Image (cartoon, rainbow, N blue to C red; front, side, top):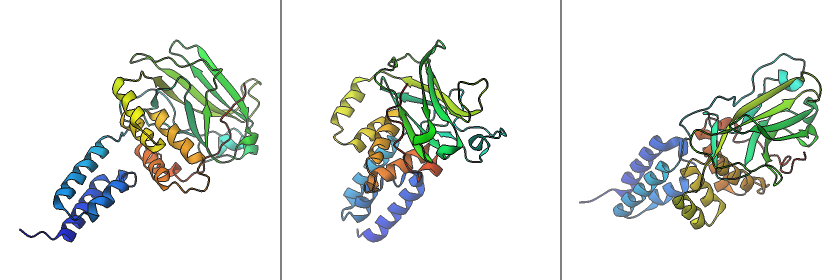
Length: 276
């Protein structure tokens, strides 16, 4: 039987694109070999590999937690609080993300200039309501874009909790000095859970030889905070935007949690070593 390979490959490629368009960018390296293969058997093999890879991508849906991924509106006389641009936490819409780290990194989109607010604060509480960490940083190192806060080695480490036990966090932008009574502020908040590393996950991370491969492992196991941090740090060092694979993955990852509008925002290296 004679096959028109060009026609068949084109049809397969179109079907794959229509089926998995939201994730097409992140897996383009798998699609190109498919449409250029000269063997129908190879086509079938690659199609199976592609489907398997897509199944391993997470949509990060699941049980949610009370929170606020985007700051609310205000009419306070404060430039940041009154702006139509919103403070946004880079987290799933469930307001909950997982981590393997004792001291994870949090990511936020701040659309304001440094002179539009006084300071910013990250605070974390354990599941008993006790505040275990707080840091306040002046706005002078900030410009509009995506920033990250990494917990320092002096911070109390997060414990690997059982299901249903979480740490709650809040990130606030203060229009006034936070030391005064009732300072004007806007905020986002959510929850984080540290999970134990399983033997399977540990093995997969050991086999990952590049940062992107590690991101894929975290992604597969829905470890949100570690996936976005590994990828964000990779993008931070790529100041000339030469790592197209990281750029595509960043766009895909944010798109899967409904934050595609932030994919093109610059990453600002302002808050990696906050001072208490």
